[in-house]
Each structure stands twice: as structure tokens, then as C-alpha cells.
Length: 304
Image (cartoon, rainbow, N blue to C red; front, side, top):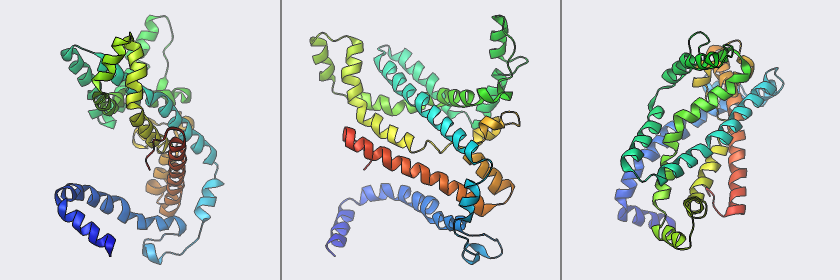
């Protein structure tokens, strides 16, 4: 009763804030939490004529089938390799870009750099993949023309499995680095200028001020985003991969999300695909909890 009374009083005093938050709360409730009742089909043999509630329970049969499948090891390793590759390469780049932009003193040049680096974020996935195919075309792509100009032979990048992960990750880094750097630029803007003035008085160079003032100042932001990124290591999307995928690079490009797409959408194995995707989500959840716990113990900064 006391908690309920306190909440009503708080809601009345801060009704504007609750009004602003209500669309976001409604979005997550309607589109994220309510649909979770359908997760139970991962433990059932779903039949459309019987509905979700009427379909028979089969326990963990779908999970066992996935664990014993021929593709299990390949799917896990491909998903993990791409996720870690994105984390190792893609996570530091926006930080470095933000630090570089923050050091630019010419405002016109600074705005130009920001515009150029932000722009790729607004390209659709289809346009992005189309550009990749054009640039890497073995016949007249600009990359192969440069290779030929240096005396090398044309490379069929999109047909060779060993190139797939690098092309996927590096193109993603190029597309998202500018947009991802915004939050770091905002964090850098919040650093007290007196810290830089004190560092200058002590004779610190620009590089030393970046290392001892800027980086510690944005460290909490870096840790929080690192936790979120680690929690999404296995959440490799299928849209871009499907557009880049072909029979020749399938060995390196087949990940859990594309397998779920084939099983659920193309083969109509709804229960089995739900089980596979639930397993993937469970791994991400465990990673998120573990990394958050480690961050709280080591650096006293965490999501909760």
C-alpha cells in the first residue's frame, strides 16, 4: 500500500515525464514483451490448425535435433567468428574517430568530416550490398582494377569463402562508424575544460591529454557500450548476409540467423526455428550477464 501510494504521488508530480516515456513503454510492451508468449512453440510441435495452445508439447526435442545436426558446429563457429570480428574491429573505430573529430579546431572541416562519416549509415542494406558487388566485381570493379594496375590477378572476392567475413565486417564498420561515434563525441563534450587547462599547465602534449583526460572521461560510456556489444556477439543479422551469400561462400557465410530464416520461412519448420533462435538468444543473455558482472567487479561501471 505504501509503495502504491508513493508511486501515485510520484506519477502525479511528474506526469509530464511519464507522458513522454509512455510511447516507449507501450512500444516495448506491444512489440517486444507481448509476442514472447509465442516462444512456447519452441517446446511444442506447432500445428497451425491447432494453434499455439492446442499444439502438443514435445519438450527439448527441437533443441536436441539442432545440437545433433550436421550444421551445428559450422553455424556456431561462423556466428561467433563474425561477432567477435565485429567487436574487435568495429568497436574501437568509432572511439578513435570521435577522438580525432574532437581534436579538429576548424569547424567547417569538422562538420564536413562528420557529414561524410555519418552519411553511409543512411544507406539501405540493399544499396550497401549493391555497392560491395560493384566495387569488388572481378570484371570491372575498382578494387580489382587497382590490383591489376599493380600487376596482380583479378580476385573473385564474393565467390571465395575466406574473404566473406572480412568483407562483411569491414563494410559494416565503414557504414556505421560515423553514426556510432556520435555518443562518444557527446561524452567528450561533457568533459570539464578545466582538466585540459590543468594538463596544459603541467606541460602535457595533445596526445597525453587524449590519453589521460579524454579517455578516462568517456570510460564509463565505453564500458556500457562494450557490455551491450558483447551481449550481441551472437546476434548477427541475416539481411545483409543473405544478400551477400551464394553457394560458393556458404561455408563461411552460413550463420544461426540465416539457418533460422531457411528453417522457419522457407521450410515452414516454425517450432524448430523458434528453438534455434531461442538458443541463440539464451547465449547472448548469458554473455550479457557475465560481462556486466565482470565490469561491475573490475571497474565499478555496469548496466545494473
